[in-house]
Amino acid sequence: MEQQKLVIIGNGMATSRLLDELLSRGASSYQITVFGEEPGGAYNRIQLSPLLAGETDRKSIQLKTAAWYKNHAIRLHSGDAVVQIDRAQRRVISQNGRVCDYDQLILATGSRPARIAAANQALAGIYDFRTEQDVEQIITQGACSREALVVGGGLLGLEAAHALAKKGLKVTLIHRGDWLMNRQLDACAGELLRAELAARGIRFVLGDEISHFEGETVLQAAVLKSGTRLNAQLAVIATGITPNCTLARAAGLDCDRGLQVDDLLRSSDATISALGECIEHRGRTFGLVAPIWEQARLLADRLVRGLATPYRDAPVPTKLKVSGINLFSAGEYLDAPELDSLTFSDPHSGVYRKLLLRNNRLVGAVLYGDAQDGHWYFELIQRQDDLSDLKPALMFGRPECSDDNPSLPATLAIQEIAV
Image (cartoon, rainbow, N blue to C red; front, side, top):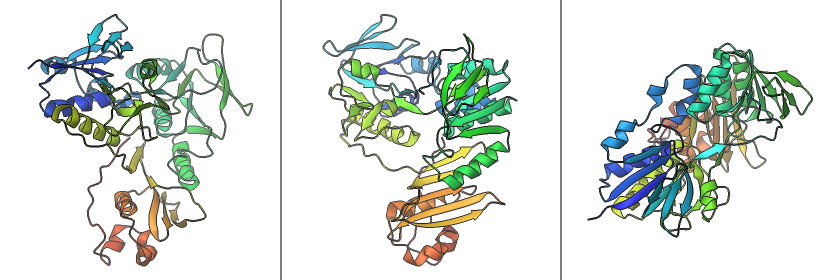
């Protein structure tokens, strides 16, 4: 039987996982070709922060070597981005002029760094924090810099700031929110996090943004909207990601925030599927590993086994380790009039817990410092049991509740997400 031509655009973590899923099902009916914008094989993008901090090396974060693709009869064209999809002829055209026909096409083009509105960003010394090449450039520039700015108070920005501070730079982190990680934490947990990282040498400017960067060709300073001027020879922009659907949009595929896919991860062209950070499914976009792994599994099932299992985006608890600080956030995290808020705070030990209930059912949890009961709380959020009898002890975790209530789950099978 003649093999079908399966072409995958993008060679990041989503593609790496998809290839594993395809091969584990015996995808002998396909001749697989992969195009990657970056040179070399796929690598673990989650490990870029440890790479910047010097806690790991490039070899350790490699997911697949060039030899791996060859050994599995997969044609890899790395460092050669696809620049055009010809849907009428069912072929793709690469930057280097390579033309490749397809029967099935998969887009896994990932995301691009979110942009900030500051002027004069073309100066040397200003970097994104998204690729191995970004990290190499930041390390090189950091070696000849004294002062560094990091823009963005989410996880990636915090990790970048901590890594640069460990290298001996004077680091200032600028975040337009009123507290750090304001999409996962409430103000109290955010302040505990700020105080801990400030004790490690990081300066914070919250509730402000960069108006413009200064310098003729090389970065010298940044001026904030408040008028504050901060000297710097290095700036890292880490304000999040946005789906990379430029190629899909140019090909006439339906796009909004991301490339729109149906429940079977098909685009508006039935021969083109997609997964990962580039897609939008039922109004949602994706940045965590767990949902993308599920997308890879279901897509491989359909392509190899002909199974039409619909993708359903399930809530995922996020357990974060920021520079050795334990954080957990699941469900709702901000107080609201219709919610009952249970809180426990021990500033001396750096422990904070907040549980949010609606009609005596748990709908949210924020844990700082001690996150060992996080997945148990997440299970309660999923089950939506009436917890009226447990409210006095609920704050103190599973050990204080399970003995008196055997109906509650004693063990969990929830996947931990380390971002």
